[in-house]
Structure formats: structure tokens, C-alpha cells
Length: 477
Image (cartoon, rainbow, N blue to C red; front, side):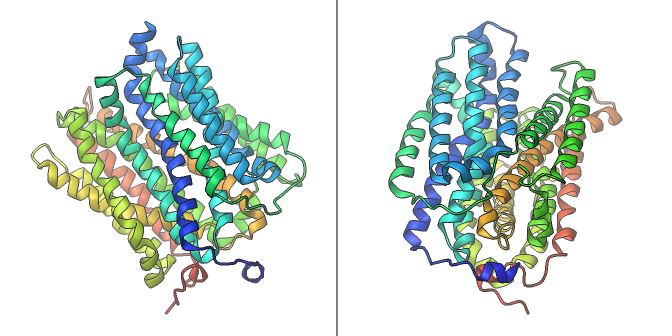
């Protein structure tokens, strides 16, 4: 594999162009990630506007997530067929148009349809944006470039709830969607003006329609199950049926993919050790981190009695930590190497996650913010390392297949984080006999998700000592 990588021509891209490309893609992804979380805060106001029970508004969230899940597996083939830049620009435009329709929706039905349009654009934005960046830079620039893409993923869940609360408080809930419009227009123009049209030979061939059907059904049903379990949104038997259908669709795809010439999700990529370990270990880490935006605001607001704004100001510290780490990621990976960083920084990130279990109403806000700031620093470095090493040994013609599979699993793992966090909270409440979660139940939930994150480090220890050294110039001792 390494000899194949070394034979690829990779001219060094000017640093200014690399940073411009990374920033443009990062801003578009930030718009998507922010939208995914800011909407939930506005749901009660939407329900009041539509004169319906707030419980039914959850369909506006699940419809977006299901559309996202169904279309993500097709992103790699679409990018290969029509070009990554064209598809990414189209994804930004489609997402922006979906936002416009959401903002003017006169009813829940129209809103759901508009959210599906948003989901179509969002499904192409993350994997194709990542693919476009990877194809626009040399391997030696991957660490610096991918560090920019770590920030949107961490900023969105942190900024979304307080921003949504502020918008609903001072303006109409429709502005939750309208703020995407100027960002989307500027983003589409910036893509056309500043991002080169880098084309490379991809998988080609016909679209794996049967594979797309199986993978889309698996993702959709599994997402429905994870989004509805334990929340009383639909009867429990329907939730269990969704899980069953999702598992059957997974088995159907697995059987189909073994004989398909160009499967929509290429599991042969697991033969690349760096990709396989990054994906499996990163999944445990993402499941744990995915629980934080769910658990932390609940604990601060329901457990400590903080207002949404006070809660948002505290949780924002983790985003500040993520931004602070960005310029230090490359020097640290160059100095210590991917393997050491993923193992020991992962342990540190896990300990900082577990530190949230120590929070109490007696803690001053600045101290909690300081802990979250440090946690954001470690978490950002860990995500950057996972996102880069995954593609370190992937030949460029297979980049689109790799980004598709990576993003599909990433989408599931982040959603599973909410499920694990909610399940830990509810089980602890049940066992302790609390009608509603107490502070001790939140502590247990944070410990549980921290144990999940801790599973990642032993897997990272299986990486070769020189893994990713060609990307940073690190020399294994």
C-alpha cells in the first residue's frame, strides 16, 4: 500500500490556497452542523406557530436525519460522476434552498418536506467537502487542512442551543433557518471563485442501486430506532421493528456487497490498517463525545438550575478550546506521531470527559468553563488525528469510497452517542428509584460514556509505530 502511495504525484499546494480551501469548506460545514442543533431549541416556538402539540415537532428533526442517512452512501459515487467541486457547490445551494423553504413553511408538512431537501444537501456536504479538501492538498498538508474541519463539528453542538434560544427570544423562529441563507450564498460564490476543480479517476461504473437501497434502508431504520427509543414519540413495538428492519437491511447489504463490483459502501477498505483502526477506535470516541451535547446542557439547566444562556456560556468553553488547539495540531503530531497522540491524548480526553461527573452546583461557572476548555483542546486534537490518519494510506482514486464509508459510520456513531447518554441516564434513574434524573444520575451517565471512550486507546495501540509519519515528517524512535 505504501509503495502505491509513494508513486502518486502530489505537488505541494501553496499554503494560502490550502488555507482558503479549508476555510471555505469549514464554514459551509459549520452552517450545516449549527443548523442541526439550533433547530431543536426552536421547536416549541414552531409548534405554537403551527398550533400543534410540541411532541409532533420531533418529526422535523428526524426527517432531516433520515434524509441525511439515506443519501450519504451515494455521495462518493455522485462526486466521482459529476466532480467534487460541482457536487459540493450544488450541496451548499440545495441546503440553502431547503433553509429558505423551512423559513417560509406555513405548516408542519411543508416544513418536513423542506427539511428533507436540507438533508439531501447536508448528506453531500460533509463527505464531498472532505473529499474535495483531500484532493486539493498534498498528503504532507493533510494535518493542517483537516484541523480546520474539526472545528465545525465541535462548534455546532455547542453554539446551537444558546444561539437558537437567543433567536427565538428576540425574533421569530424562522430566523433560525434564515441565517443560513447569506452564509450559503457566500459559500457557493466562494467555492466557484477560490476552490480549484480537482478531478481524479474514482470508482466509476454504474451506481450500485441495490446496495444504495439496502444501505439507505439500513441507515434510515436504524436512525429511526435510535431517535425514538425511550422518548415516547412512537409506540415501543414500532421502535423495535425499526431496529429489526435496520439489522435485516444491514445483513442484506453485507451479503450483496461481497459480490458487487463497485459496492456503494466499500468494506474492502478495512484491509487498510490505518483506515480500519481509525474508523473502529474513532467510533467509540465519537459515541462518547456525541453524548456530551445531550447530557451537559440537561445537567446544567435541569440539574443546576442554569438558564439556557448561562448554560451556553459555560459549554462554549469547549469550542474555544477546540479553536485554540487548531494551530498546535501539526507540531504535536510531528513531535509525537499519530500512534502516541491517539493513545495518550485519547486517555487525557477521556479523563477530561469524566471530569464532568465531578461538576456540582457549588462549582463556580468559570471553573466548569475551564475544565471544558481543556477538554475541548484534547478532544480537538484527537478528532484531527483520527480524521487524518484514516486517509493517510488510502490511494487517491479510492478517496471517494473512503470518505463515503467514513462519513456513514461517523453519522451513526454520533447519533448513537445521544442514545447511549440517554439510556445511561434513564437506567440510572430507574435503578436509583428517581422519578426524574438526579445529579448522581448525570454523574453515572458521564462515567459510562467515558468508559466507552476509553475503549478507543487500546485499539489505537495496534497502529504501527510509524503510522502516518509520511504525513508529518515524524520519525518513530
